Length: 328
Image (cartoon, rainbow, N blue to C red; front, side, top):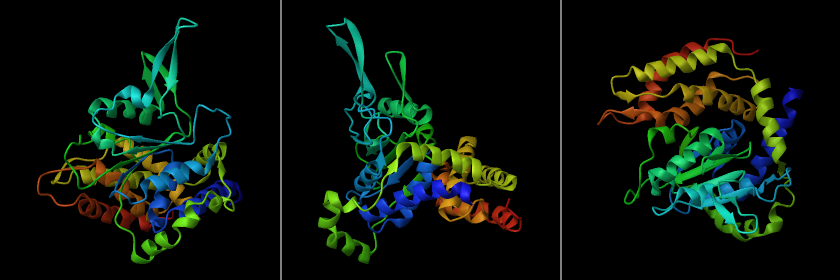
C-alpha cells in the first residue's frame, strides 16, 4: 500500500491536530476528514457552543499556504444574518479613482476553509450565492466569474431547535452538502477533559509538536485516493440499487439525486483509507449512507425517520453485496 502512504500520512496529521483541539468529537472529526479528502462540504446541525467554530478553525490552522497568496487566508468565518447581502460574502467591485477602473475586492468566501455559521438565517438570495461557490468553486460579481481555490471547503451549521427567523435550505442547496451531521452533547468524561485542558488548548504553543499539512498535500491526497483506492463496480451498482429502493418507497416523496451517488464514490474511497484499506467494502457504504442520503430524502407527512426508511431499503442490497469479493 506504498502508493497510499502519503495521503494516509496527511490524514493522520490532520486527525492528530483536530483531536487535540476538539475533545469528544472523534466520530465527527473522521467524517469531516472524509468530506475534506472527498472534495465535499459538510452541514452540521448542532447546539450553540458545541465546538463547531473550534473544529473549523483548527482545520484551517492545520493547513499551511503553499501559494504565498496573502489574499487567501486558511480560515474565514461568516456569521449569516437576515440582513446579509451576497456581496458581503462574495466580494464587491470598488471604483479606483487613480486608475478610473473597477477593482474586485474578495469577500470572506475566498479562503481554504469557510465556516458558514447559522446558514439558514440568511435570505435565499444569499444562499444562492453560496450555492454557486459550493457547486462550481467560483463566484460571479457584475457578470465576471472569479475562481475559488481548488481546496475550497465549507463547514456550515444550523441550529436544530430555534426555527424563528430562519429560511429553510432549499433542496438544491442541501444537495450540495456531501454530509449532514447531527451533533449531540459529548460524553461526560470528554466534557470534563474540555474543562481540564482549556488553558493548554488555548495556548498557541499547544500545536507546536503536531506538524501541519501543506495545502498542496491535501489537493494531491484527494487525487491519489480517487486513483489508488479500489472501488469495485458492484459498489456502484449497490448505490444505484439503494437509491432506486428508496425512491420507490411509498413514504418517500423524493429520493436522493444521481449527484449524491457521484459525490459518495470519493467519500467511500476516503473512508476506506481512513480505515486502513485500499479498497471499499460494504461496511463503508453502511457507515456513510445515512450522512449522505437522509437529508436528500423528502418524506410524506407522518412517515417517521428518514434513517429508518433508508436502513430498511439498504438491508437486502448490502446483504447481497457482503457476499461479493470486493478486493482488487
